Image (cartoon, rainbow, N blue to C red; front, top):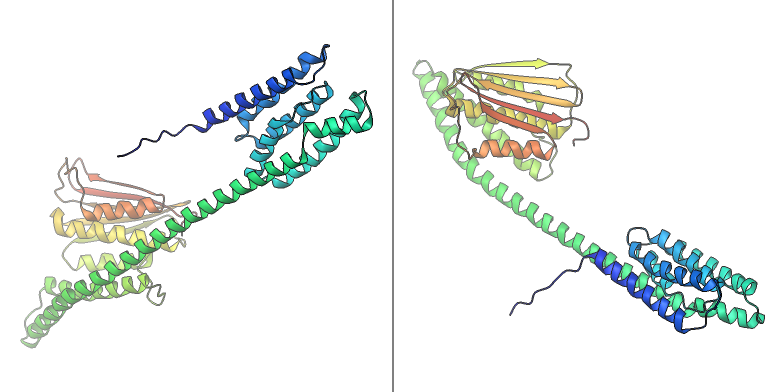
Length: 375
C-alpha cells in the first residue's frame, strides 16, 4: 500500500522552530530567576526577539547569529538567567551553511562578552557572576551545536556529490549509447552508399567507354556518393575524438553550393559583412543548416533556384536559405526530422531558428547563431 508523504515548506518549519524556541525562552525566563523592576519587560522582549529571529536563519544565517548573540547579552544584562537556546540554534544554522570560522569567532567573542556583562551588571561575587554567564551559554551545548551543524553539512555535501555522480554516470552512459548507435548507423549507411557509389561509377565508366554523353544527374550521384562516404568517415572519427578529420564548417559551404548546382538547382551564395573566425561549433552548425536546407529543396520543394546568405554581424552569424519552390502556406504541424535536427543544433548554441513558407511561394530557413562564448 502506498503511503502519502507531505513535504512541509522550509518557511513553515523555520517559523515553527522560531515560535517554539521563543515560547521556551519566555517560559524559562518567567519561571526562573528574573528582576522585578523595569528591566523585566526589556528582558522578555529580548527573549522573544532572539527566538523569533530564527525564522530567517536559512536566508541570513550570519545576521541571525549576530541578533541572537546580542539578545543573549541583553537579557543577561537585564538579570535573566536563561540558556541562550536561540543562539545555539543560530550557531547550528551558520555552521550548516558553511560559516564555521565566523561562528567560532562569534562564539568566542560572545563568551567573553557574557562574562564581562555579568561582572558589570551583577551585584554578587565574581564566582557567582561567572556561573551566571556560563548558565547563559554552556560550552558543552555550544560544542554540540557546532558538531550537529557540521555533521549535517557534511551529510548534505555527500548527498550532493552522490547526486552529481549519478548525473555524470547517466550522461556518460547516454553518450556511450549515442556513440554505439552512431557507429552502427555508420556501418549500415556506408554499405548502402558504397553500393550506390560503385554502381554510379560503373555506369559512368561504361558510358564513357561507349563514347556516350554522361548525364549530369549520374555525375551528381557519383559525387554525392563520394562526399557522403567522406562525411560518414569524418563524423565517426569526430565521435571518436579524432581531430585528424574535423567536420565541415563555414569554409566548406562554397563547395557544398557548387555540388548542388550540378544537380540542376540554380544555387547562389552571398556573403555579407566582414568574414571573421567563428567558434568551431558555430561553423559546423552553419554548414549543417545550409546542407539540410538545400537537401530539402532538392528533394521536396520542386524548386528551380535557391539562394544562400551568410551574414557576419557583431556577435552573431546569420544564415538564410530561400527557394522558389511550392511550399504550402499552412505546412503540417509536425516538422520533419531535418528541421528538428536543425532546431536542436541552434538551440544548443543559444541561437534562434525560424522556418516557414513565403507569402508568394517558396520556403525560408533563417538562423542566428551567437559567436560570443560558443564553443
